[in-house]
Amino acid sequence: MKDIAISVEGLSKAYQLGQIGSGTLSRDLERWYARIRGKEDPLLIIGENNDQNTKSHSNVVWSLKDISFEVKKGDAVGIIGKNGAGKSTLLKILSKVTTPTTGRISGNGRIASLLEVGTGFHPELSGRENIFLNGAILGMRKREIQRKLEEIVDFAGIERYLDTPVKRYSSGMYVRLAFAVAAHLESEILIVDEVLAVGDADFQKKCLGKMSEVSKGEGRTVLFVSHNMTAIKKLCSSSILLNKGNIEMSDLTHRVIEHYYHSNKERLAKVSLSSKREGSGVVQFYDFDILNNYCEPKSVMLSGETIVLKFILNAKSDIQNIDIGFSIHDEDENMLSVIYSSYQDKIFNLKKGLNEVFFELADNYLSNRTYFIRGLLKADNIIADMPLEPLGELVIESGNFYQTGSIGHQTSKVAFLIKGKWS
Image (cartoon, rainbow, N blue to C red):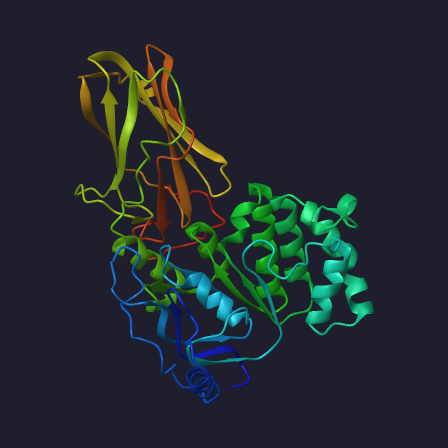
């Protein structure tokens, strides 16, 4: 079909542990003949699922197992899943970095990919030379690449180092140039792995904006692997959830993410005990949960629903005059609101050990987007604990906020909702 950019049928990838060669010419020819006919390797031993926590007696690991899907032209598709799910392997196969064990892939257009740092770059060549090399690989003429050169260099911010061999670049410079090359050269399909995690926050934001422009503005196809659900939700209209090498779900992004949250046994809204923090330490955040008004843990809430925040605090001894505060931030870490218990004349006296404190947000004016909750504890007005990472993530989806059945203008561009009386 003309509107299909990528078609994947029955794709599997197995990795042999230990010695790879068969040891005999006849066996190697048998393997080669099966490969050119698109058949399964006759020398493979069928292994267990791709589960890194499972001990296997097989010498074969299946990174992907019989997956099939299609991506339409101009779509931005997210690929999510835990570590070891097969996400990076899939992108490597689609980018033709590695070959599948079985299955068939057909693509409609040139592919530019950004996988691990350094893929597609020659370390001895300068930044300028690598730009022209990548353009030539995509089949672009020299004058076409020259026309894009200034835009690429400006986006990557490496003008001063353009004629320096890339082996001398920092990892941040490397990934900035790699992304700029992949996004600006004229490919029909852009494939991006989690490698954006190498860049700083401003550059990540810049990259997401460029990928959105590539997909929505230029009509190019984007495949994006990330553990950042906020980034996936911002960019991708649909997503694929991989689990142990299989497709567990393929649907609209918000549905896939909600399923992933619910199926993930690791509690996402929890502050790490080892996270960096500041303060005297006489009392600290130990755990954090987001609950509904029935005190059930929830990963996704609706606008207008009552939200209960549960803080578990660990006091080193009996302690008095504890002021508990938290702030709500958007995806760009802009603070939207902050509250302390002292604002409402509420100060806590805690017993040694674990203590539970609840905050009920009955008037939930939050809109359809992802928010981050940060916390701070004061003892006698002195900072006792301030984790440098958010306590948790709060995902809000459109709900019956106005009690009329209309969701109104509930979009990710709106930070909060308002309602009142008209007369």
